[in-house]
Amino acid sequence: MPQETQPGPRRAIVASVHLPHVSDIEFDASLTELRQLAKTLGFEVVGTFTQKRSSFDSMGYMGTGKRQEMRRFVRGEPDAGAQPGIDDTPQDAQVEDKAAVPTDDGPTADWRADIMLVDNEISPTQTRNLEKEIGVEVMDRTMVILEIFHRHARSRGARAQVEIARLGYMAPRLREQAKLAGPQGRQRSGVGGRGAGESRGELDRRKIRDRIAELQKELEAMEVERRTQRARRLERTGIARVAFVGYTNAGKSTLVRALTGSEVLVADKLFATLDTTVRALHPETVPQILVSDTVGFIKNLPHGLVASFRTTLAEALEASLLAHVVDASDPAYERQLRVTEEVLEEIGAKDVPRLLVFNKIDRAGDAAALAERLRAGHPGCLVISARNEGDVARLRAAIAAHFQEGLVEADIFLPWSQQQARGEIFSNCAVLEDRTEGEGTRLTIRGEPGVVERLRKQFAAGSGEA
Image 1 (cartoon, one colour):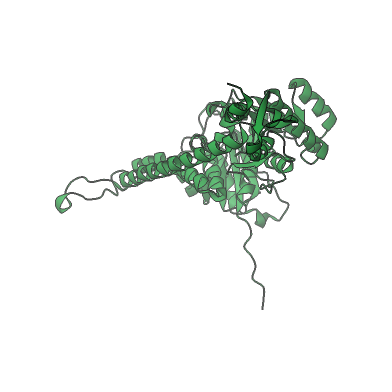
Image 2 (tube, rainbow, N blue to C red):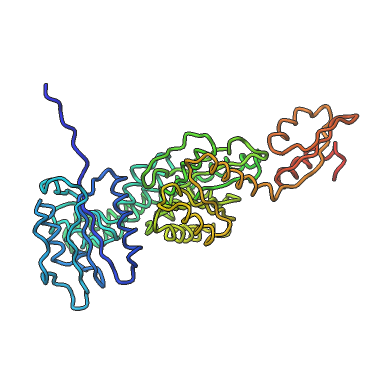
C-alpha cells in the first residue's frame, strides 16, 4: 500500500513597516524575532516583505503596490516585482519598496504561502482588507504571541491567564467589527419581539465580560492557595530565593536545569516556559536556596499578557535576588536589557537586587572581545555559557555568596528532650559549633535572620534568652 504523506508545516510570509523613529537595528531585531515566533508556532517562513513609510496605511497597513506584490508572491509569481509609482500613498509617505526575500532555495512554485504575519498590532479593518486583497489569513504580532501562549500554557492558572488576555484582545475588535457591520445583525427582543434589542456584537461583548469575571474569580482562588503554599515554604526555608528573569530564549531554563539538576523544559524557541517552576539549588546550600524559572519577556509584549501574568511573575516580586539573563550572542542584547527592565518596573520589581548574567557567550563571534566589552560596560556582571560547567559553578557561587551576606549568628540550647529538633535546625541553618553541656547541647548557628529568630524564640526557654 502506498504510504500516506504527512502534511508539511504551514507556509508564512512576514511583513513589516519601517517607521522613521525606529532604528535599523531595532527594526531588524524585531523582524528576526517575528520569524522566530513563526518558528515557535510551527510555520515555515518563505518570504519577507518590508517597506519604509512615515506611517501605516490606515486601510491596508502597507501601500497598495506592496500589497499587490505580496498577492503575486502568494500566488507563486515572485518574479513580478513591484513597479515604481504604483503605491497610492500620501505625498509624505517616503516609501521605499524592497522585493520579497525568499528564505528557502526551492523552486518558484514552492514559494506559495497560506498565512501572513504582520510585525505590528493592526486593526480589524486592516486585517480584513489584507486578507481580502492578498488572499490568505492574516495574524498580527499580538495575535501570534497570544496563540503561542495559548498552545504552550499547561497549568490551570496559566491557561486562565492566557484566556483572559485573548478575550481582552478580542473585545475592542468586536466593537470595531460591529461598527463596520452597521445596524445589521440587530436581534429582536421584548414582548412580542418588539424593541430595539441587543446587537449580536453587544451580546458577544457581554459574554466576554462575564467570562473574564469568571476567570478572574478562579485566579483569585488559585492565588489564595499559592500564598498558603508560599507561606509554608517560607516557614521551612526562610527567604533565600532567586528568580531567573529575562528575555525569552535567553537560556534561563537551561541555567535553572544546570543549577538544580531538575528536568525543566529546555527548547530553542521563544516562550518555551510559561509556568513558573521552583527547584532547590543543587548541591543544596545551608540555608536552602530556591531557584525559580519564570516566563520570558519580549518587545511589544501585549499589555494584557503582562497584567494577566502578574501572578505568574509573583516569584520575581517575592525573590530576594533576580538573576537577569541576557543572550550575549544577540546583536541587539541592549534591547533585551531595556525591555526586561521596563517589564520589571511595570510589575513592581525594579527595586529587587539584581545579578546580571550574560549567557551564550560561546555563540558569539569574537567571544573574548565581547566578554571584555560586557564587563567594562556592566561592572559586576557574569559572562558565561550554560554549556560550560565551570561557568555554571561560578554562577552558583555568586548566588550562594549573595545569600551569605545577610546571615546572622546565634546560640541555641537544646535540652536532651528536644534533640529531635536537630534535623530542622541543620536543614535550615549552618551549624558552626555543636558542643555538649550538662542538660543538653548548645549549637552556634548561622542563617537567615527570620529563621534564626524563629528558632531562638522556639528554644528560648532552654537557652535562657529573652
